[in-house]
Amino acid sequence: MDRQPVASRSGVRLFYRSLTVGGLGDRLRPPTKPTSQVTLRCERNWEPLSEQHTVLRQQLMELPSDQLAVVEAASADDRRTVEQLREETGLDTAAVTRAAFELEAEGLVAVTETTDESVSLTAEGESYLDAGLPEHRLYSAAVEQGAEEGGVSMGQVVGAADLDGEAVDIALSNFARKGYGEIESGEITAEADVDLNDDVEAAALDALAAGEPVADEDVLDQLDRRGLIERAERTVRSVELTDAGVTELMAGIEEAEEVDRLTPDLLTSGEWEDVEFADYNVEADAEAIDGGKMHPLRGMAERVKEVLVGTGFEEMDGPHADAEFWINDALFMPQDHPARTHWDQFALDVPPMDDLPDEVREDVEAAHRVGAGPDGEGYHSPWGEEMARQVDLRGHTTSLSARHLAGIAQGDLEPPQRFFSVEKAYRNDEIDATHLLEFFQIEGWVMAEDLSVRDLMGTFTEFYEQFGITDLEFKPTYNPYTEPSFELFGEHPVTGEVVEIGNSGIFRPEMLDPLGVECDVMAWGLALERLMMLVTGAEDIRDVHGTLVDLDYLRTEEVRY
Ligand SMILES: N[C@@H](Cc1ccccc1)C(=O)O
Image (cartoon, rainbow, N blue to C red; front, side):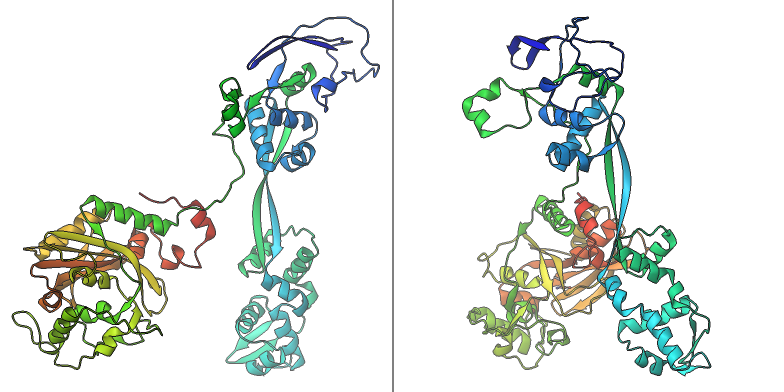
């Protein structure tokens, strides 16, 4: 074999190749070594091809090095998995996969995909390997206690089986499901002819632990439902040479001088101007990489901010841990208000806040004691500075509004003004489908000379329309700091239930006077997570935020705009 380059300009390399071929048309074995070292031999006659019959002149196919390595490692009569090719070529999985798809696009290989299921035991599944399934322990104990002859008290059997906590429920329900006996009015009876060794679930657990496959899908499903196994599916790709691939390999394939990435070297040497860049195949299926990404809830917060900034609002900022003064007192919340107990708010064991502005503090105290505004009566209840200085995690972000209206956050503000924040608030709530201990509030207020409830409702209608929510409902409510006050409701797209999504109102003189505000202020606190539930259709807040959120959801959910 003898090759003479006749032209070598960037990207174009022509070779004349003289091949000595005996008996063309015989199927030739695809070479597995780099083309330059290949000796072509006929399968029927393993004599080196020395006699010169024909001289072929051809231009060789060129492939980038990864593709060349993969095509050479592939075989025409044996499917090789990406994993095998990875070992053979020394490339990484992503590079092999990419090369395989590129070769497939060129018709040189065929890529097939199969799904492979792997099954492993969960910690709970493992724990039963030695201890036995709870229902087996219950059955054995029941038999020992004489439950084959008649009912034995459940407490006695459970005690003898040494079961406690969740294991008791697990044992009882599976005992009944497997027909090991009956449980009625606190008594257990055991069937006589049960052979625990016949239990397919226990047998499957043992097999899996020993690394043996379990074929019975029903048993696997049952173990999965019990949380004893974990099943993972994985796509296995295999590569096989096509006839065209074999033909090209026989003819010989050259390594293309293609560059697949721009390096600092290429840039500084100026070589980038001459090199040939490999095409980028954006459709090639490659291994999924789960990088960091914005949390969908954070994405929603950003969207809300954009909408508000777009309608002329300015963002407020302020402390998460604040004096009760700004969280409660400045909002005309009496110091004996039930929401101010530890049942509702998180008090911090830190020194009190000692920089309350004197004038505002005095006026707030007067509003509480004797009233403020034209008809103000105050509460005539005790008011102590000590409580006002106590530091809590803010239970609402209305503390930021109080700080801004008082002029201590950004100086005195002249109307008109519009402010908002999308920030965390903390409450000692009972955690359930619609409550978490911390949540995001969309706080906001508008300061102007003359505001009415229509302005408030119009603002909400416009805001929620941006998120496709057009069926708002308003319900009068009570807040110490607003009059009138309205709760907002929206319909859940999946359950059809009407869900509370926010609270709002027009700040009372008892709040505004001490803060030195002389015009109208309408304000609100909306729940970001509830908005998220209405937008995504999630039925449980814990499905979108918190430790129980499905990782797949976080990895694949698009941030909605
Ligand atoms: N602070 C109220 C919301 C609100 C803010 C401003 C005015 C009226 C209501 C809440 O947390 O529910």
